[in-house]
Image 1: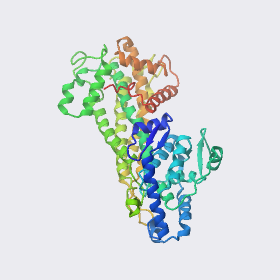
Image 2: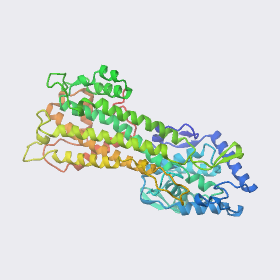
Image 3: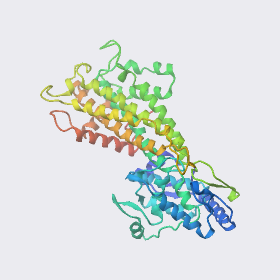
Image 4: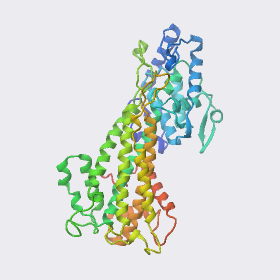
Length: 506
């Protein structure tokens, strides 16, 4: 069980909550802070003090005063009117992550909710009650208003939830659980929806997958390296220490570890003097991706433990400040950086695929790895598919954060588009995983021609894993199922945190 405190949730803990079903508990000290901030909000209502979002309208309506008798109704109208997300829903795991992250933020004690609301969100996590949340409709400033409104909607017994993979009414889920919906009180609706948890949740799930994908790309590249009689000198420690990037040094170290004992690798001058960049520059290119992943992880873990709603309650209510912590620019930038970094992993992977299938570049392998070149096409169109995915990734990698459209009658005149960035990061990761699956499939076939008995012990273990889900090209067939099975295998490793199997031995 993981204790949520509002200040120290990690991506690894989140992975366990999402993919291993680990339960959460609420830190008692954090709940005391929640209680105190709630008391402060109730004093504001009782005293008639004007505070944004408690007894005023929202956005451009911030100058409209709300009577004390209407402060609860104000929150209900807010949730209903803002729950206008569009399109297909986020995955159930992203929805689960949103609940966890919104709960964790509220536990900081700056939001003014009742302890009951935090307890109900924790129940949702532990009972696996996940809202159906449409993906589109957030500008990434003023918080992820539309997506988080759908999260809040189910608390009040409206909207839809996931149950056994199907969409059912929230009313039915609460009835089945023997629980009543929550009746929101002053400020609680605003506290639930004014935050960056949609972009951060999607970003965190994407990062969990991307981190392992980056590790997997190394052993996949190592198999290609063997199939190409790659020159090991390129991974010599002195080269990488001379440049000084620790991530580059680490990739070279892992490549040497993967290829240890291989009789398919070569030294300078044995077969050729230099390899192509897609082989020789693996540490430099993959290492740069790791630099970006480090930046993204840092920003995500800060945001996962941040107070991102508005206004915030400080000093037992003596200070209540309207600010802009809901603005998603830090995560928008991080997601755009993640997009570029993972797109480049697929880009260089596709170039290695080309070297495996092109008879002019493959060092004597059968053209397109075909068992009967000419009569059978072999992996010819697999390279086409990889090239298509890589090209699509280049389009998706265009930064979302450079765009902004004013909203709320120009009150909210600069927005981050961070949620769009996080969704595109997910799409790029899914595409990249399939490109790497294609490389793994082709590399496994290529090393078969070279002689699997000559592989390094560790790459041979990975070859066995690939062969357990996708057989050799002994005759032309529909290859889509093979690629999808390899991609599913890679995804399962990511979700289960199997870093050791992916090469994180150092």
